[in-house]
Length: 189
Image (cartoon, rainbow, N blue to C red; front, top):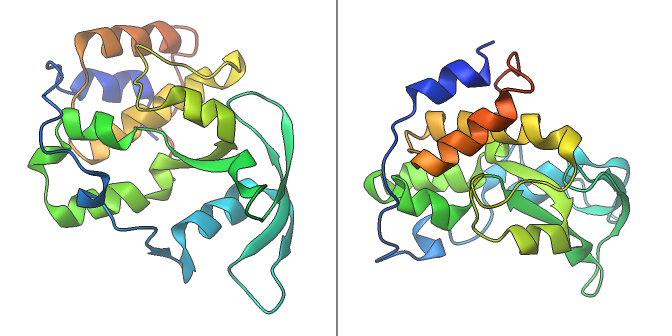
């Protein structure tokens, strides 16, 4: 399995392109389908423990426990209008960040794949995800410092897979994190 530092060196370094023409629905009109479930429930199933299913459903997570990688805190997820936002599905490489770093040049099919790719998705604390917004590694890192190596390695993997670039500041920030974990592997999903 390749290490993140080696893959990072292969990424192009360019400036951020304008956000002109960006719309989230240029990537997907909602969650796609992974292994017979919608992408959101697939990620919840992968990332939560102690899962219960909505009555009569095989792909609708009703409750579960998340050890949030971004904060390290444990969140008890309960599906509902007022409770579901406690756990959100984060695009590790934010959608608008991807647009400004090459996704405007890839096919609609590739943008759809990027949006629904489990490699680029993590179940995380909702408020922390909202605080991250569309930031890259130069402007936001998880508060949980023990997860930062895995986080930037995942960003590098996604950017390499979809042929997206990094800015000089972003590359420097990622290199700074990976200096503490030079053998950090690239995740596969």
